[in-house]
Image (cartoon, rainbow, N blue to C red; front, side):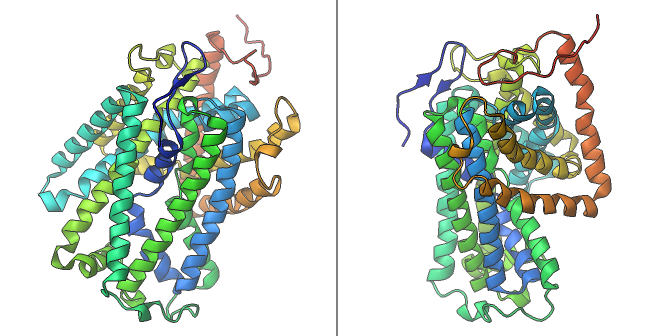
Length: 466
């Protein structure tokens, strides 16, 4: 468990208080969301076989672990706040890092925060008889409350997050034990184990859609690196937490899928919501819907807490580099947290909750988000070839195969998304590129502080005129 000792590199920096349990909890809490109750249904319906469902989960776990190992090596090389922003900055220069942070700060992070908050409150809508206005109000209150906890100290935020993660895993374990251990289903539902049921999608198409669904179910593991500046011994802790987090998430997904298939025959799977209702009824009888709603709310609340804890560290890192307003780089004198960066995320997310347009907005940025993820892992090769400072290769087990195991399927996923939604992918990319003028403004202001920092590269010199 996390100790009481702290580490501080120098005055004016964040204090290192997080241990292995806390950083692992960030991954588990953020990754495992409401999709765990919905995604297995669609995958089982299209794949038509328990064997192929397991194969897809394990294949995506291997791909995710490869990416996590690469991020662990990057965190060990650059153990500071900011995660993907820092890695992109070091590999490709501050312009690329800025575009990632521009997208994260203004769109994807507030959008996902709003999505989690509304999803948490909305899951209780029928149980508590909430109106749409009440759902939004509860969502805003949840965002504000979690922001206050995180402003009050990284330790208080981590304590709450560990508690929510433990609750999440306990509730999911209850579902697995109650589902598999009390004879509420039928093991014959898993047969035939390998042969695909009539009416299943063609296998290549089913595998493609299954892997896409599994990828998004694993999404969010990369956020642990954003808190490297507040992690004790980050060169060891972050890589270990990434690996451990992926293992825990994989085990949960496989066991929950097994329990659901045991409870509900594949031929009865209709919509994802109907499947969840059938599983809830099999587990808890007539009260299954209400019980499941409370479980879903608790699960999503953990994801919301992890998002609010990790995301502001990107804005803090960018402000520290002179790429965002300097006020966001301020550390609270009493609580030693990036309080203003946390307030920014909470404020933007709350505005999106009130506006109610975050789901439509996020749809435009799936492609770009994954592209930045791939670019970050590809940066491993760039940094290792540059041979500046410590080599990255020895920090990444299985290098150079490991990043390739991640990059090849992600490249295929990008092609799939571009072909499925060319308009959304193009518009998302365009919005990100609109950050270039803002980056030029940062350069002209003379506030850029990256050049000359140990281990950092600066943008090539450009004559900007007077």
